[in-house]
Length: 241
Image (cartoon, rainbow, N blue to C red; front, top):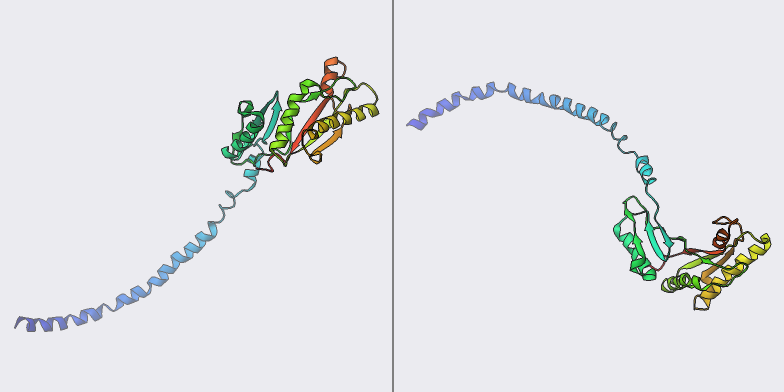
């Protein structure tokens, strides 16, 4: 039968399998070959960290952040101008909405720029360039000053946590002592105007500077008029947000 005749042929091939025994020795040598690349990988690993410290340089963002303009708000001519950088558009819109509550949307100019490196808007002190002027030697608030006083009243009513520092100034005519006392009386007049309309006096701080901080030339009548003024510093504007 044919299958029986093929059986010896299979047995005769057995020695050929045995003759291939050296092949495992070749395989046994492979771990040594594999070890060489592993040692090379270790060497490469020790070299890799060298370029890493250069890209991870912390001072670079700090230097860039120094170029970010600080956010600020300036009240001028009954209008408020929002300037500088804010981290997000939403942060700027929040301040603009608050300003619109006080001065009306038509009087708010949102000039903020958006820069992710910027800090949150810092409106601890709002610069109020508008002021209240006084007649010579007087601490009486003039009718033209009541527009600004009404804005201050609206702000302090809408934002119960807002506090205001009221600073009085004079021109340089008269003695230092007289002018210092007159500047305090002017600041007190502003405080009294607001407290008479329901504002808690504890929210108002009065300071007198006398003639020490002029903003105009006292050698002219116009300069003297500008120096007879009140300066406002608004604090805690965002405390109720």
